[in-house]
Image 1 (cartoon, rainbow over the protein chains, first blue to last red):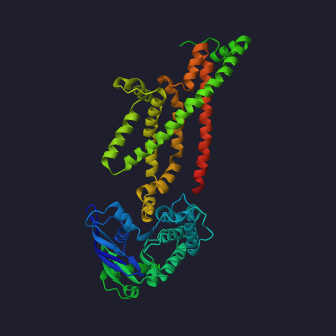
Image 2 (spheres, one colour):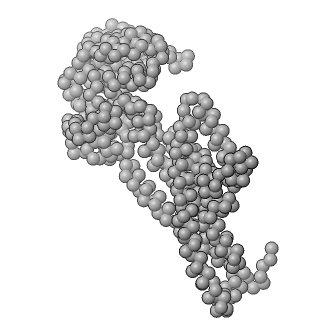
Image 3 (cartoon, rainbow over the protein chains, first blue to last red):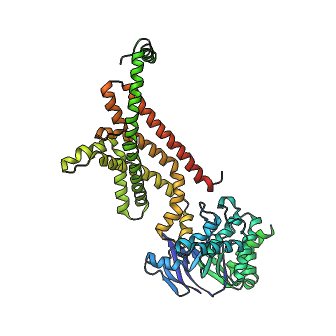
Length: 249
Length: 243
């Protein structure tokens, strides 16, 4: 479903991604972990060209973006339609209700029929447990509720791939569970997902595969039980032991 | 400067109230000039203000977008335009348009000349307001619009400008209120707007204080009504903001 080849990204002189190769199969949930500054968020943002990679290519379901030459706006927009993103800070449109947020993509971008889009948006919001809140503005919702609207908004586009950028990092601890549950359900339904997160329990429980990144490279990848129980790389071991220490505290 | 010995207000009021004939004359003039002043307001002052504000706003949005665009030449054009308009007096701009351009063979009637002048003026000042308002919208909003597949214009129209208009409403109301009062300058390029009518009437009867007072009152009423509208709009915009 996704094929990433030799992806590089430089910000000025700083090389954040130093050649990433990865493949994601249809229906897989991939979790990307790694210390802060490892480039995992940049990597995710390269998958929908929110950051334009310096070189390399990304293929999502037969649409290839080759970054060795500059892409036209049309190419970028066509490529973006393959995926949808859920943000750390939700980035809901504050001037629209939950329902309007979810309907916005289908109506404005995909030119769908308003009634149909509305019905679909209602279903999606019900699915993420917000059937009662469809007419609330974002400021009236808790962080967890806002993030679930964010997920519904992304799903409304019927993307082939869902990208999650630390979706629970900005949430109060007691609200993390409701968002993870929605994501878990999505994975179970066979949605192809790439998730950057610090939630190791989610990685262990839901991921088909875990990528460990450090200093702009994929250091290790494998099944979650392998990565968490028998990491082969020194850096992975160090990272995991640091995380487990804080888990105990 | 010359001041009457007994205090000026007292003297003026005395001259009226102790003299029934003068009193009657003033009431007559006030009554008879009321209609022409209102007429001039409806016919020129308000249309001039509204048309110029609409054109000015469109110009302002374009200028603001040019300023924040990545195309150097757009930025430069916008900067030069704003700099020229803000760096020269409005009255001088109007005079150049109306009295100056005929020298180059370009003759514009008073009203269109005034519309052009005021639109250019509003465009420059409001562009700074709108630019600041657009820049105040978090980057995440652009990104969210990008990821749901919106084009630049769709992002602007559906996501950025609706939010920016909330931020820019108070300063833009200021611009509009200033504009309404500034239209009195159009009297100097022969637009028979309200203040010019007041001047014309005063020239026939020498009751300057009365006529200019009436004009001032009318301006104030318009601006007060506008501030009420502003309040209502702000209230409507605030429906999606916690307070």
